[in-house]
Image (cartoon, rainbow, N blue to C red; front, top):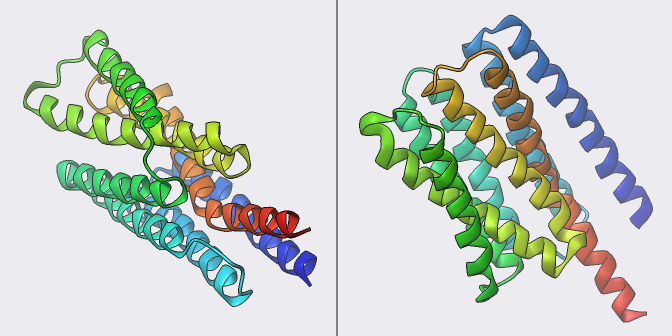
Length: 234
């Protein structure tokens, strides 16, 4: 029964992997932001929702707070992605709120440890170095960019802690978070540095896969925790 359940989840997530790739390519090629950006954004939220439903429907023992907070983070990311088209600051704020929900969800997996600070300070330092060393004139957007960079750096730093403590649950989360971090860096060069073209492509090529991997972490983490629990019992 467990194998059938796992197979169902894998099959569903393979479908969403294909749909993520297709919607990402359509947006890159056709460029209709209102249509394809919305479809691509709704796609990863739907992926997270179905993963959430399957986990509860199959009655897996899970960390409910992790799942719920991560899902809420995806909703804010979806709204931020869509509003970013015409309302950049509002979209950025929604993204930042989404990152906070992601960060909190990570802490429900592994509570705060003092070693978290080393990773967080390290990623924040790297972010600030990139911002100031890039030479991009951010003008009055500098405070917002710095605040946003600090928030996503905290999220990235905590994901490194998860990976260090438990690679089974940390790998998928860290991979998604690193892609998210890179996507935001590419976005900064694209929007504020006027470096379109390749940076625009890199931003989109990393962003939607990042959201996909975070979405499927709902089931991946849950299955890993259940497998570990069954192994410990034996």
